[in-house]
Image (cartoon, rainbow, N blue to C red; front, side):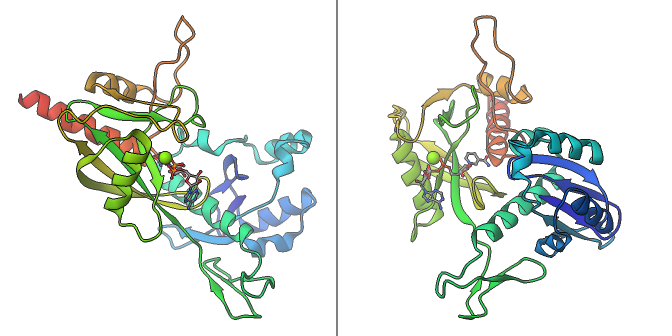
Length: 304
Ligand SMILES: NC(=O)C1=CN([C@@H]2O[C@H](COP(=O)(O)OP(=O)(O)OC[C@H]3O[C@@H](n4cnc5c(N)ncnc54)[C@H](O)[C@@H]3O)[C@@H](O)[C@H]2O)C=CC1
Ligand SMILES: [Mg+2]
């Protein structure tokens, strides 16, 4: 994936799992595509992801250089030399990117992935065509119009008023804990989805809930994450972890969570080989929920 602009400006280049930030313009992109044996008409597949304060349009392009990551490591290193940058995994890049670049990359990742997976009309089976901006695909045969999709997801930080509940999925990086998340079912409200997900994943009944904020999240596909704080009733704190969904879950004190928030990214192993628990990067809305909880608990314990 590559992002380019009409005038020199920061640009992004990454495959689905790899990120590379660099600067160059469209004509330079054509030269690079040619140099690496790619069809320059590929530029037409780019999608509009935003614009600068000076109203320069920013586009993202999928170079389909997946092979660069595995079999053709020589070409990958040549590309790194040519562009004077280096590849890193997109999820790892979240620890380094600022808010604005994160938002651009998330939009690019989600839009390009959606176009890649919607090449054909579900009604006629014929190829669909992208509009110039990449905001939709049209089937000339059936006249169906397809718009990029987002799945609604709820993410909830449950508290018993003194501790908060954090959980791990087996797919998470080692030692990382987060809030409970889950896709909304068709027909559900946000509130119903929160109550169902909390009950399904840890067997707790939500007493009250409060909306916090939302975020677009491009992994594995486009989701609209809606973040809430929830509390459970007094004495209703016994957790029953659904082992099909979670590896583990537990209650954590303010002190433990505040210490973990200070860790920037995966910490190194303790002397006994264990990894101290750590939390998602700032770019993830889970981080914001946890930070908000720490602020609220700290101010109420200062008042007490
Ligand atoms: N930005 C953030 O701070 C965080 C984001 N997340 C994201 O939240 C999302 C949901 O969390 P999970 O616990 O995995 O969800 P989940 O608890 O609903 O379980 C995932 C399962 O739901 C099913 N499912 C139902 N509808 C689906 C849909 N539209 N797309 C994909 N699977 C669907 C699939 O069987 C899937 O395996 C994930 O994509 C994850 O990346 C999770 C934690 C933190
Ligand atoms: Mg879940």
